[in-house]
Length: 387
Image 1 (spheres, rainbow, N blue to C red):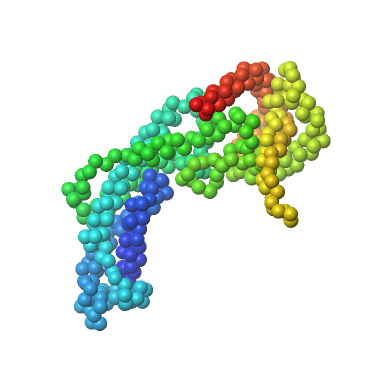
Image 2 (tube, rainbow, N blue to C red):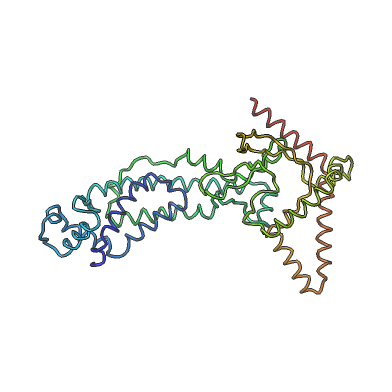
């Protein structure tokens, strides 16, 4: 009790400041739900609420303002308030009716957030079950493609647990009866529900946007915010994108230097090979990167602000995918298996190269059909936007 009496404001004042903020906060977000759960867990410690209530029972306005206190804890708390907040500070009891009414309102907010989180998880689970087989196979080998700003389904599953525990702890801390809670019709927030569903799995919209190569820019994940979607449009040179968390920075830089040397030296030959007709041209188009438009932003010069313009980058060789950590791990694992089974490392690498070449041949063979489907998709998208 002495420790709590000396630090009473650290418990009560902070809680009263957090209480209205939690009612304005998105409690469906995992980090906010976890924060609420941790706060309620602190106050649900054994006998903590009882001790605070006992200390506050001796803290009437007369006791705080009089020079002689009627209780040792009142004297301690009065001294702490005078030192920290000054003589004009008006202390609000944590277990007053005003605070309890705010807690009751918070319980309604938690209930709505719990319903929204539960319905959101059900919708995301249904969406995962209905995803295409090839996408499910890709996620099985490469992991789910969640960006840093798209919350995973496993994190979403923890939200109802956090909210349910926080709700129960608040009821026990303030000894609120179930019949005291207003029995209003609380439903899930459908607007929030639909907004999350439209922004979750937004890498699919990124894949659809990448089909339109006539539009400058590519979409890259925003690494700063986990709550809002999603992708920012990078309109510069794709080879100069910032190094991502799943890439080896050393390999990215060295492979870029090598590709730059090759692309500059054999620029005309690469362009001619890319635009070549026939099966050989199809193979080249599967290996080389397609022409891209990049936007040069206005720059400030001595004479003023220069105007921005678009620049077309010709077909080029890009080895940046080789810097991916997943690919490096697979190569290392294959080399280890080759060494362990007494197969030559070069034999395994040659076998992997043969598989990759067969894959390129298959894609080159199917290029006429894939190109026609892509053109049909663009036409439908354009017609839909015009309507």
